[in-house]
Image 1 (tube, helix red, strand yellow):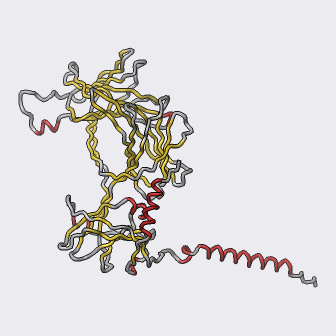
Image 2: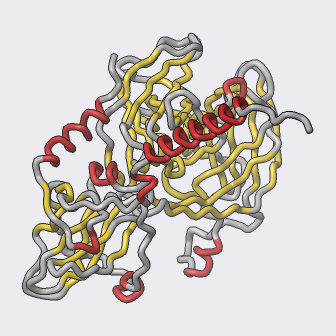
Image 3: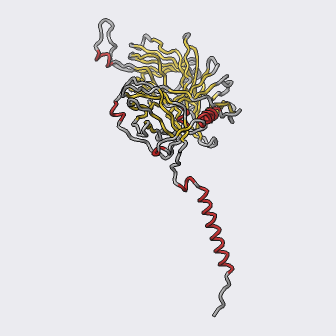
Amino acid sequence: MIRRSLASFFFVVLLGAAAVATDLPTPWRSWRYSRSFEDVPRSERTPVTMLLPLDLLAHDDARSSDLRIIDDRGQEVPYFLTVLQSESKTETLPSHILERSFVAGQFTQVVVRVTDRPSLGESHSATLQQLQAEPWFNTYRISTPETDFMFWVETSVSDDAHQWRVIDARSPISRFRKRGLEGNHSIQFEGYSNPRYLRLRIFDPDRQFPVDDVEVLSCSGSEPPRIALPNAFSAEKSPDGSESRWAADLGTPNLPVSEMDVSTDQPEFYRAVRISTSDDGKEWNFRAAGEIYRFHQSGKLKESLRVNFPEAFARFWRVDIVDGNDRPLPNVRLELRSIERRVTFRAEPARTYRLIYGNDRASSPQYDLARILGEKKVLPIVKLGSEEATTNYADPRPYTERHTNLLWLALAIAVVVLAYAALRSLRMPTPPAQ
């Protein structure tokens, strides 16, 4: 099965763009491509913003350092590029393990004291200062020396360590070091809780599960909007019969990727995932790992089908799903996703604008616009027209780089001259001895 769908997508786009071309002003002839801005307000001076399309990123350099905006006079227009990042805040609460016990054939139990302070009284209202001092948390992390496992965990809380309330009946923890995967040892439940005691039950019926420590955490954060890359994955045969493999050729190393989403028809499952990248499709490097799962708990569906990782650039991507002794997941569909990138600039009345790109020699520009404009939540959105090739394009590379054959020709001539000189010196008669 040919895994070139994304490369074909960009190829079709390029064929369509080849029929459209334009001249650029002399200072900008070293940029290969351009697109005109559409729907720019003409009646007032106002900041506007635009979402960078994926096919532009394929022609842009990997860090968008060659992007420029020019107006109809050929003047450079300041802009700033916005790449939203994940926001997260984690606070560790002081805690202490009070109990480690084992009920044979059922579970390992760990009880953690989160705070010594008495709980807030129910008969009177609490002050804001008291509420802020409460041990609000929604996550805990288990430290264990175990190297390979996958178990379900029940989470309960209490204010007196006698009356317990289950807040999460079943969530998974795992580690697969034999396969080079660290797995996940954290449990995060819905909402925040402020109890004095935390109880977890790890359902390993055969033996007591070793727990070195339990970190109690308050975690919050948000993920930026992402856009999906066209589906380019196809199934491949894995050398490991207990794993399933998919691979994709994005056709360019310039696309930023920071997330992979999985979909499957399997109603319930738990799998570890390994993501690798390559520049040539031969030498592969580990990129990220995660877990995907789906199960039903108390009539509610719980699932996690996404793996997030730091933004990466690579042409070839490979995903391995660890099946173990289970059958491979049916009808798997994988999707790489990229964080949105937006360009913001100030539009002047009665002016038209063009975005130019495709110059490997250009360095990142520096403008004051971002500091001047400050943070504006809502801006008019403009669009880009179709890609146009630069008809009067002037290659910015030095002459010798543009004509590499001349270097080989000069080298060949030098070799011939040296060989001829050496041959002549061998043929010259030796002068008679005096």
